[in-house]
Length: 398
View 1 (cartoon, helix red, strand yellow):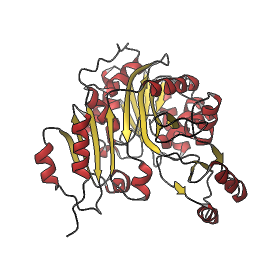
View 2 (view 1 turned 45 degrees about the vertical axis):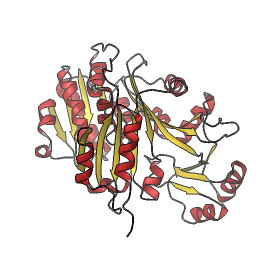
View 3 (view 1 turned 90 degrees about the vertical axis):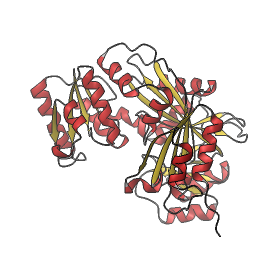
């Protein structure tokens, strides 16, 4: 079996996919823009061959790399980057090389265009916020006044809260249109509530073989207000979350891969959407969750999601993963602009036995993920909350 992994070195945790696929006797072929001598020993050991291109954004170069591998190793069975940015390229390559695993061609836009996601939610009668495509000021003002402020504007294709704004009134809408971005945008009603996520692995039959629920701080606040970022895995998946997300995954006909579905647990009643405590779907990402979430899934479930995926790809039947121990796993990202009540040394002294990872982040991650991060796991939500409070509490000004 020939598996082409696009950009196997970024993010760094993806080298674990290559390693586990290799252990399942899959021929793993890498295409990337990093020099070979900058690849980690794990990637070099896991890959059968690596093809360097000048830019992964240059489709012709990547196409020639795939053609070379197809000529040398025979039919390509899988092409994937697991990276939101490269999903359209992955889909085009699958179509051009007749790869029958994964989404092909323009069908990928069901996974990455927020406007198309919204149509699916409406068609499947899944609760979600009202939304329109941003076209002209008059339509935007009419929509905002109909659904009520605040509203959110965000790129139709985009990851996280990048280039996303919360607009509170007509004046802010007019200001947005004065500097209207040159890429398609959508506008939707802002729903108040807690941001949650449902992370799953889907097998080749479309069945969910692993699931995990997450409680998240609003990433929009982390970006626009430069606040700390904190999120937690929770062992119990709410029944209504599982039902909503399973219905969506079936509608998408998703197979053999990951899904990261973002939801809002409403903190008030919204007629036509749900009552307080109900869940509304925000968006779906048919790829592994970002940041350190894959590691959190492993720590929380005492399992190896990279290996579960590799067994699905290779066809080695994976029995229902038995989660031996369930933990609340917490990510805390602390920002450089704050002075915290507990120093790094004091955090380690108090929680050293529970902390599984701590490190200085790469500079380009500081804005969202924090300058310094901690991963810690706990048996109870009470202890997890204590850790979150202690690691984000600011020192009082004298």
